[in-house]
Amino acid sequence: MDWMVSLQGLVGGVLIGLSAVWLMGAMGRIAGISGIIGNLITQRPKGDSAWRVAFLAGLVSGPLLIIAVGGGLGNVADAPGAVIGAPAGGVPLMLLAGLLVGVGTGLGSGCTSGHGVCGLARLSARSMAATGVFLIVAIATVYVMRHVIGGGV
Image: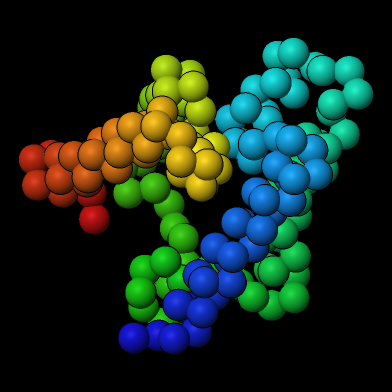
C-alpha cells in the first residue's frame, strides 16, 4: 500500500470538508458545485457572484498550482508514473456521460459535492437518498461497462 497516496487523499478530504464548513459558516451557503455554477450562469445574483467566482477559481487554480510546483497530474492507475489519460470509451461517450451527469444534477437537485459532502454532514434525508442513488448508479454503470459492454477498463 502506498501510504503517501493515502495521506494525500486524507489531506484532500480534510481540506474539502473544511472548505465546506467555512462556506456554510461564513456565508450560509452549501458547497455544491452544480448550484454554485448554475446560479452564477443562469441567475447572475447581484452581490453574490464574487464568492462563486472565487470558489470556482480555487477549484481550477489548486490543481494547476500542484502541477506548477512539480506535483504532477496524479496517479490514478495505481502504477508508477501513470497519470489520468484519455477517456476509455472515447470522447463522444465522455460527452454523453457529462450530459447525463448534468441532467442528473438537475433531477436530483444537486450534485455529489452538495449532497455527499454537505448534505450528509447536515443529516439531510434528501441528501442521504440522493447519495445512495449516486452510489447505486455508479456501481451499476461500472458493472455494465466492464461486464456487459466490455468497453471499460
